[in-house]
Length: 218
Length: 128
Image 1 (cartoon, rainbow over the protein chains, first blue to last red):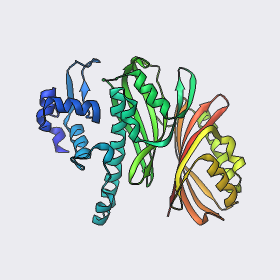
Image 2: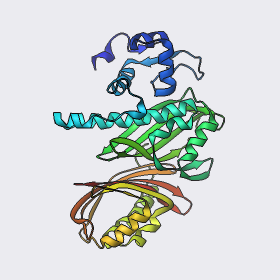
Image 3: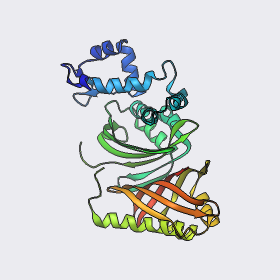
Image 4: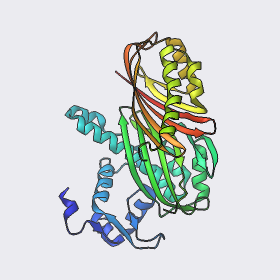
């Protein structure tokens, strides 16, 4: 927690972010595009100045390095090892981080405008529901993958976890997403999405996405 | 999502939820069916087995039979325009399939339809 009070809480360029993570700029840009590295922008355009909060980068790193060298799609929470240690707090952390990793995959797909990239985050029988401009859409989650792909990249999205509620094998995630843009979203949309997840074979999979687009210009 | 701001929407949601609770108590899937959106889904582990789909749910409720001692408590209701989330805790669930004294946690997501609020997804966890 003390790190939040040090002089440089924020990393204020790709160069600083890369240096902090000890990687090339190219790698950290790829991580932002594909793996949900939490980078913010001053303005609304891809080429605007970027900045990142150290504590957010550190949290993302913790989720990622637990399974260093493995592809996100292949990771399994090391729940068994931590059960041996016995602390229920550790067990909670394992589940919480596994859930956010699944959500990072969804976010990466949204950011890239690639429905296939987010597919592994979902259960095969997942569904979606919600209203878009007054019209109800309910059905297979494949409609979300199609929408994301047709919409195209949304490089400026700012996702925030508003709630993560875990009850053993089920979980609820409320995700707020600002600055969603694209062919279908338009210039700048805000969404409040509610995801239900199920723990299946040690991995958390999204079973349902309930979406809500806002009318404001947030 | 801010906590429920509009009492009338909150009450409408609870009215729909009551159909579900009544269906559980009386062991009748048909009683709870109107609470669900036609394309609603259900996921969860019941006694260790993964149970998917509302058809399975209604059928299970029928086969389980009445659960007259069931107690339910609403933990949270969050409403945002056309979507809502409700957490329900159910205890003392008994019956031919449940056995006795089962404690279940339910996460319901609701969609606001012209005809009223409907459950679009039920995610449940059966505590051992």
